[in-house]
Length: 288
Image (cartoon, rainbow, N blue to C red; front, side, top):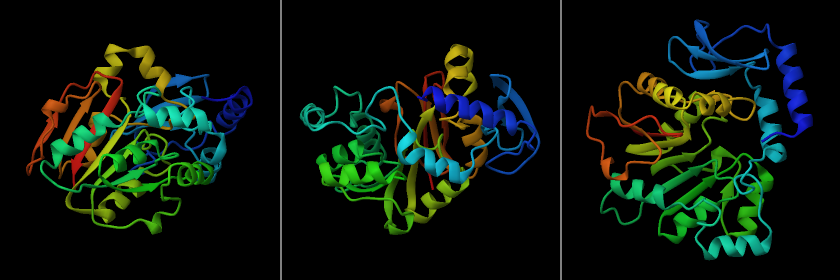
């Protein structure tokens, strides 16, 4: 969600940088195909090599860092905006059901992937102010939290008693699950995020990412929703072809919302599962 001033700034930046060379932000290929366009100057490309959909002009790292400190906001007034004390008390009392940020569906996935494990360790990567981290801790998980925005991290640490760090070097290795909910579509460097996951996960641990769904099945079902979901706030548009390409040597499960919890199970070697991909959210589970 952008203010009018942010929209104008975004449009001007797109106009000024329109003729910059188009190059995939994941693999660096300049062999790309245009898929969509907004306001003439902002375009969505597909990399012909790795199949990432990405917005051009691409996001600059320093601009991305500044934007997510305080400027980023969402319509739900919860994802990026911290609640007042009375609202927070109500959210905790109802286990975040009222704010539609309940973590049960994620916990169910974790339990299906690691059945019988007594203490599952999870890294909540891009935790915002910690509403998912807090719920997972309440459920008995061993949770680490990382957030790029220092104000949101400070809020979660102060008001939820968390230990959200803003420096990736402070994260402990040997986690069972590297989890992100609506983070990877914002990230200025998907390769660095995946490399971090490989560094921190136990052998055979799971990389799990939930994001807006750019897959062909969703685009065909809801062309307007597909068009609306990419832009300033979402410079990356994840899709099943991209995950299949970059994780071709790994076992994976790809599905969409509503998540088919019953169809999720521990991933055996060489298993590649593509479930229904027509939903609004994309779920990627990869065994690394």
